Length: 196
Image (cartoon, rainbow, N blue to C red):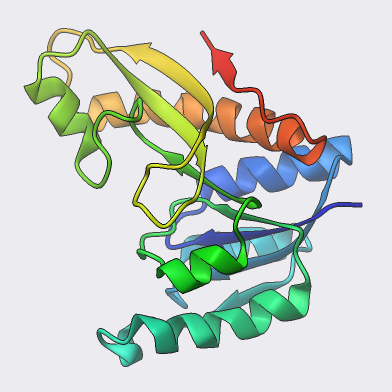
């Protein structure tokens, strides 16, 4: 059975959908949920579903990303994941870390990549006058939000939308898209999933 570890930073709603899909459908086993914030709400949600959890607070490491990643690798490697999913993990990973999981690390990003890599994606879509926004699941590469696209889902940008109202609608699509992509990825299918 394919072993999946998930990295989070906060509430963990995408992590929750991934774990629920894996447990309900049996296409993979969630072996670890790890966070860079010991108070991340998602850790409790994962634990309640019987998934092992770990946290490595990034703050004591300051700007030393390599030292933080070395500490994060301890529980990660002990869990022996085949696939690593980033689900709202708000730390930029070094090229060395990415190389270690190359070809088997996924991320979900709240824009229709290649548009709007990085932060503040919803406000940027509104400010640009875009007719639609959405989310993308992609393979993680050393270049931020630039890996091969594995799936996208779209939502209309409505008159009067704020970044928050748009984000809420996009998040609903994230919850559909990420499990669908992971299911196919586990089966060896990297053809992109496009949800209406």
